[in-house]
Image 1: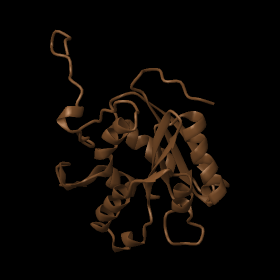
Image 2: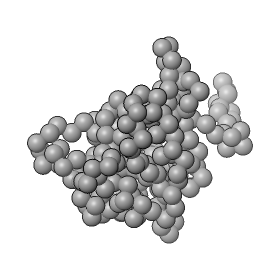
Image 3: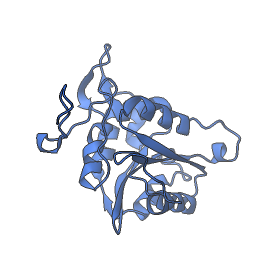
Image 4: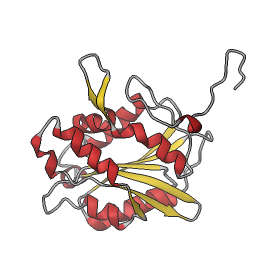
Length: 212
């Protein structure tokens, strides 16, 4: 069912946790709470989540991504899980299968950030893509499986005082990407992640008199 925006700038976001054990109830899912909790802290503009918990099955992943973009109308879809080298890890393949264009910079930056913490980050196969249909487009990003790693890749490297260091998190580029594909204007909590737009793309803010 098509999601209805309650505000012109409301972000419609799909959250997908991909785990065999969590999907069958043998393991408590941490992916969806991790994604939801991070967005709740990071976004200051309105947003509505549409959540799915599914098994590591390529057909199910593809169907879910298509449903969230084409039927629900999500502007952004974040997945967690299934991006390693194990045989059951097929999230990147499913994501690429439903894509119209790939956005390789997101995956490259996620691996760069994660390598600052663990050498096994080179085993990660996360991808990001665009899925475009008539009159609508969405950004789909594969994220790591653990909430801590999700936050690190979205926010970037920070010092002991919480200030972002030289390596920005990937979410800094998400609002402008959503702008460019025709989505809503996203604003972030700069204490969590500072989004970047060129000056020409910034929306003027009202002054004390309420004028733009």
